[in-house]
Structure formats: C-alpha cells, structure tokens
Image 1 (cartoon, rainbow, N blue to C red):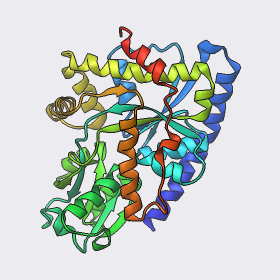
Image 2: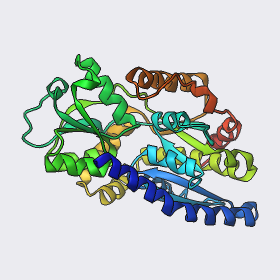
Image 3: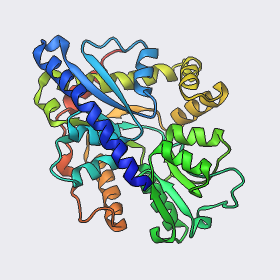
Image 4: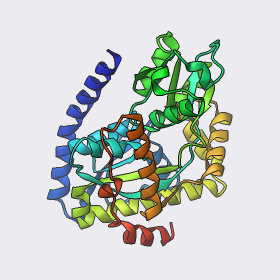
Length: 336
C-alpha cells in the first residue's frame, strides 16, 4: 500500500510540474539566446544551486530553474515527462528510465562524487547489528536508486538472497517515517535522509561507500542537445559546479559548512566533518563521457538484470553521448 501511495504521489508531483515545464519551454523558445532557460533537477536539498551561489558563480548568462526531488529516479521521471531539461542522479535511475521504453534523454557528463551517507540503518535500540541480522526482517529501500543497488550487494556479501528479507520500496521521507514508526526494521537510503536518521538515533549496519563507483550522471533531454544554446548552457553549468567545489576546497569549507548546516538542520561541526570527509574521499568534479564511465554503468545494469529488476539485458551505451565533451572540456579549462 505504501508503494502504491508513493507512485500516486510521484505522479501527482509530475502533473504539477508539467504546466511549469511548458511555461518555461515557451519562454526559452520565444526569447533570444541570451534568455535561454535550463530546468535542472536537484535531489534532497538544492546543493548545487547553493554551492554556485556561495562561490559567486550563479551569475549565469542564462536562466536556471531548479526543482527539488527526493531522488534521482524522480528526476528521470520528470525528464521523461518533459518537466526537466537536465537531471543529476546516480548511475541507476537512467537505467530504469531507459528500460521503460524509448528514452528521450542521453547521459552527457559524469560528476565524480563521494559515496558517503549511503547506508542501511536500523532504529535506536534495534537488536540488529549487521546485514546478516536482517534475515526475515522488513527492510525499506529507495527503489531504482543507489540504495536498491547497495542493499542487494550487501545482502549478497552476507550470504543472503533478496528473497531472504521483506523488501519494501519507499521514498526517503516515507522510509524515515516508517523506520521511526516501527513499521520497518531497517532502511537503505542516502544523503539527507541518512543524516536525519542518525540525528534521530539510528545506527549503521551496512554501507555502500566501497560498493558504489562515485559516478553521478548528468542526463539531458534530447531537445537540449538539439539546441546549440541550451547545449552550451548545460556544459557551462556543469563546469561551474566543478569550479564552485574547487572554491570550497580552497580554504572556504567553514562558510559552506554553515550553509549546509542551515539547510540540513544538523550541527555545524557535523556538517563540516561530512563536507571535509566527502571532498577528501572523492573531490566533486565533472568529467567527460568515456568508455570507462559507460562500462561502469553497464556493470550496474547487469546486476539489476541478475536481481530480476530488469526483465532483459540492457545495453546502456545506447543512451550515452559524447556530444557535450568538447564544450565541457573547454568550459572546465576556463578560469572561474
């Protein structure tokens, strides 16, 4: 029932976004190249928008309309529905978006990032201390995301099958509520939801830190690649985010930690530790599409085929493109 309610909620969200998308599209088409609009997705809180503003790199010569989602899977749904131009996600949501039918998007760039706060957690006072202890338990997870992937891999490492747990697909906020309410025994999630879970006393029994590749993908609607102005804007925006993180690492961690703490309602010291640890593990920076990045996602897709979540083999290179490589390389080399 919870899953059906989640799907209805997602559908309702997209229905609300569609008129907004149409309005933005009309504005972009009607204006000159200097009034190009990019509708861009963000997961959790608007981290990318915040880091650009903090670094003073939000003065783009085009409009950016940010929309907030609970997961990259919802961003890809919005791309499919025509409500977004550019989506950021892990390697996983584009796989399922493409498997649903003919994709109207292509992966255009990769953002390397940390794999911290990707965990399976149990509530305070739980007797479960490791993944093996989840056998026979009800485990929530965010479907078609990193949480789905690393939960499966952790179960396998512990000698368990997916069928050994009662797996319940839930959105991050619903999963937190279910964990605190006692209707699930554990929850596999990421980002802000994991930070909040720990604030509420949850403990970690498994982590995706060393399972996930750290490749986070930028997917653009086909219409973006057909528009020279939007295509140039997408490359510029992705490069600006890389430069903004470089600015943060260059002795400006304290200020951005405060921005993060205010947005996520966590103690400043914890926000700074998470920021420093994340950038130490894998500095946030964009790179162009290459054979290795496609191969990395193919391995993930093959795991979902093995799990049975994909009905048949999916050749992921069919929805990757190098069309943004030249522009992105040039933009990354420009001074911030």
